[in-house]
Length: 434
Figure 1 (cartoon, rainbow, N blue to C red):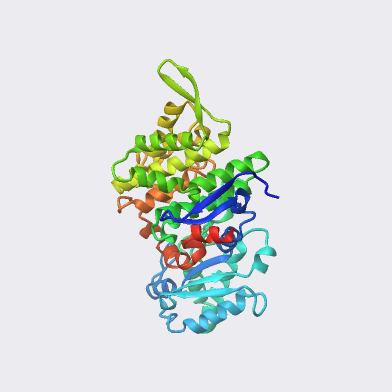
Figure 2 (figure 1 turned 135 degrees about the horizontal axis):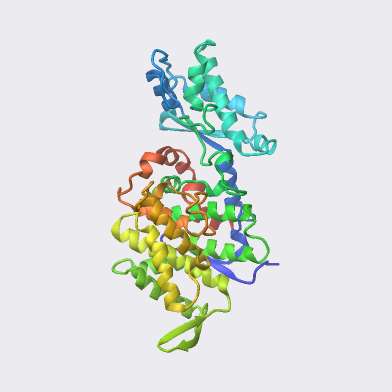
């Protein structure tokens, strides 16, 4: 028996229907096998830059700087097959388990899926990156018969400056996830993924990027206890309508307003659609002002989230700039509240997030562009999984105006994780998983 009475239709990033009549719980991170696979691979998969290790050792540039006089000229790429075989042998728990290694760029980059057994026998997801980093280090030492006095350079080329720094600064092994010590509270790991990573993994496709980010963010909501009891339906609805283009709402709003629309016309389109779908109805009048009522605040919130996403795509897409995302998050919802008398997206928390975000991303403070923020950041953490996906869409539509471009911060993620279907086409994969 279905947990929730409503069903949704899932559409792709081209407005084509993928699945109809989907029970709401079928998209849950707890239920959908594609989503669970995505999260499982997020925890288990580590990118290793063998080309970067070779170049770093050749020039002596390891960790946070140069170690002159300790350069090492190792033909790592020429010996990649032997090195990859050694890494696999050491990382796997038993022959034929779910350890998997993919090669990219002629072996300069490899993607190592550590076996589930390692994570099941661990308290955190650290087990994946530490196992792969150690295996890479030892395989190089063994392959090139490195002596005790030179092994430290190999270790530094792989691990970066760890343990002198808390994280692996300057390392050539990378995970999508940050280290647990950087998570600002319980359940923040999947929300601690920078915007630019999602942009590059999905090949700068705004809707796929938003879907990937929304999946991480909403899975984070489940992990931190935000989707228990009646709140589960609230989170699933925002995930469906904003992240997975349920009932083609985001696509329709963007299509209707894309050519000549503004944030204000998206507000008009959303309100018209909400009235048409009987999500809201005209209520009392106060002078010239028409208030609206809703019998389902959670569904209204999902519509507001989809509208916020559409407004972001229309506005930031028109200008080809990511910087406008914070003001779009703020003023779309400000206009929506004034138009309806109902709360904006996430009951005001998106507006609150937007005020701090505009200051920290490119205002007087100007600490960094939108692309380096994440849902774990002190400025952008407050909205319940519905702000960061909009930032991903904006950064995907950006034409190079950011100080920190996706290519400069996250290219390795596009070259590796971006080649895996469950990461680069989440909309289609999650619909299949239904």
